[in-house]
Image (cartoon, rainbow, N blue to C red; front, side, top):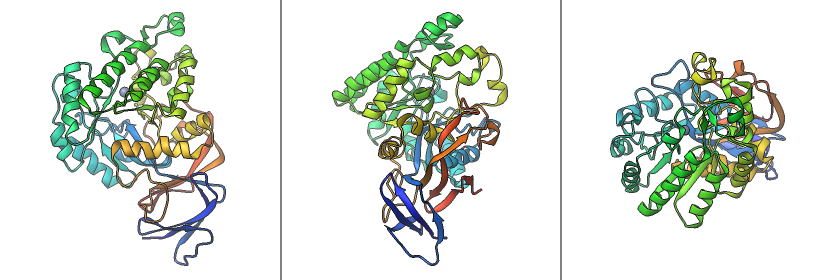
Length: 425
Ligand SMILES: [Zn+2]
């Protein structure tokens, strides 16, 4: 195993120092380290962060390997500075049994580019009718701790209650895609001034807020952990603030795109901007940014949703919702939050690792810590070229935008997965 001596790096924004990586861990830190056998990387001007952790990734395998595979998504993640991703359950077949979650987990280990932690479905086939084998998935080799029907809301309150009760035994968490389905029938975009102007059926903010309000009350009643996926409205922030003040065990995520883009994008009719929940208003974006800084929203999660060309480059009404996220998330966070490295490390690595219970991830580089880390060049800018992305899909909303920051290197347990901005394999 090669040793690496990273020279002159700022660890999470601190004063420049050296990091020696050996045998999969950070062996030493300090100025002027010597290690004759190590490969030296000059990291002057670079920032070392704990490897990023994504709580919300769609890898599409099994079932839609034309859009993404565990391997291509893992490579995209590594290039984005990630060392662990949680793979959503809406594959085909659905990850609702021990067999499927173990398959995804094994494919992740074989790719070896990030740790792939499968999320299990809450209900059989995501149909929202009966609970999936949560216990069998938890006991499987994949050790599933997060369960989600993402793409669908667990709309039935009794099922949601039972799911929360069930996972309490092993400190699991239910990750809810908060969307009251009756209120979003036929919805094409955010319900508001722009949808009225365009004559498109709206997805009202209250459809999200009503489910979050119900579920924080259920989580409080049961005493279980609840996580809210892709919070998108100012009203949701207020519900979460109230719940957290009451001590409810609720955590929440926001996506990069909901921190940056608004429903005005729908006026282009370019389906790359179609996503669920939809892009909201500038006031919502401002509230989400403030909530992320304050901690009412705990983490940034990508909701990386690759789609094949035929599912995306068609009429708005027929296009599948979702956009790519892994390879651009850190740049968007840097754009939105500025160089607040401790905040970025907290929201994109430490907190998601804690929520997911991922050992060895989300830890700042320090002696003895597993060497899961990424090196960022904050002074660099990049133009996003869809054809250059490692994802098998091309549905990025940031095409040809100039974004700040560049991932220079990523290490997974001391082995580089990205060097010089390029995937090692
Ligand atoms: Zn979702």
